[in-house]
Image (tube, rainbow, N blue to C red; front, side, top):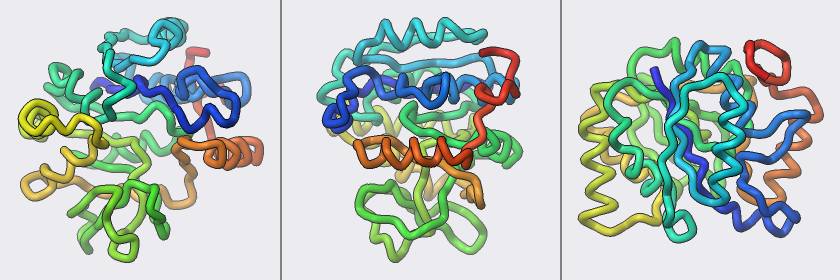
Length: 250
């Protein structure tokens, strides 16, 4: 099992809060968002990571190097004009076996990761709630299978928000690489969320929804998101493997 972590973006909207470093280095307690991701992986026994970097990439490389992981780095020099569908496409060579996926700007409870690992096949972590326009939403059938995913889906039809943390099984990888290449190389649509490629896969590959239940996760895009994340952290609502020492790497 490997993990692919997308950490290339600039986080333009956060600049209003005074933050001008990579979003994955936002501090929560003594640790950063990236520390929390890597700590969750180490606690789960996953130490093989692929990190897509772009904005201030050396800072991210140095932060990863502080952990006991085996890391490969993929550069996205076009981070300012592209989105996650392009970053993941650049890492397509690593989509060759089961892998975990992380958006590096998500603060999530470490207990979510074991839930994904315990789910057979491909699985998406879903916060079941009413969603607004900004969330990446999922439609889920009665069997728990994700049938649609995307930001533009009508909220009333959706089960909840995909939080940007997932597990993809090896059987999905060939078609996933093909879909990513189609969007990036054939269509030239490189400024999309990677979920556009996932949506193409849903007709032929089972993607299971893994509800968070009472566990918490939040994607940080704006100053308002950051304030909400800080409030969650300070309330103790989010368990972090690295902050609690549940992993053997600090």
